[in-house]
Structure formats: C-alpha cells, structure tokens
Length: 85
Image (cartoon, rainbow, N blue to C red; front, side, top):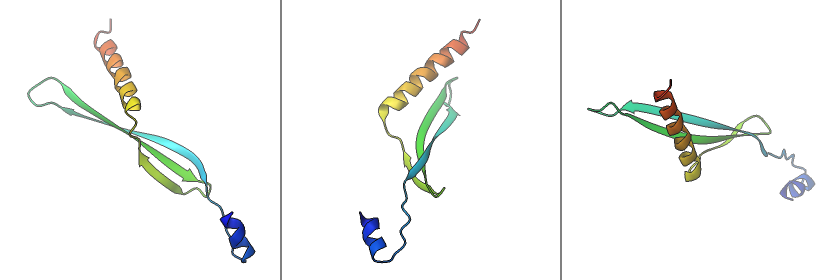
C-alpha cells in the first residue's frame, strides 16, 4: 500500500522481502579442569538474505526445543561412538 502512495507521488520504490535463510551452528568445546570431561556449548543463528542479495536480518535462535533435540542426538552419538565395537 505504501509503495503505491510513493509511486503516485513519483518516487521509485523497490520492495524488499526475505529471499532465503541460512542456519549457522557454532559448536565450542573446552576441557573441564581436573577431569576427563569436555564442556560442549552450541548456538544457532538464523541469517536472512533479502531479494537484493543483502544480509537483511540476523538473529539468535532461542527455542529451547531445538537445543534439547541437538543435545539429545549429540549425547546419543557420543555414547554410540564411545561404545563402538
């Protein structure tokens, strides 16, 4: 609607919208002092590119379910790898 108003006034309006998204996962590990354990941290970021090819928006994904599913699968995988025959 706003585009039409500006166009009627002679302005050129190039609409912008979300074109694609990329989910970026950052995994960080560090040894736990005086143990054989490793601390594992993960973050998920969502990066949106607009129809002009520009990074339009970047946001941290905070949905607890995504993190829980990741660590459930990660724990299962680590357990299976540790007990590999």
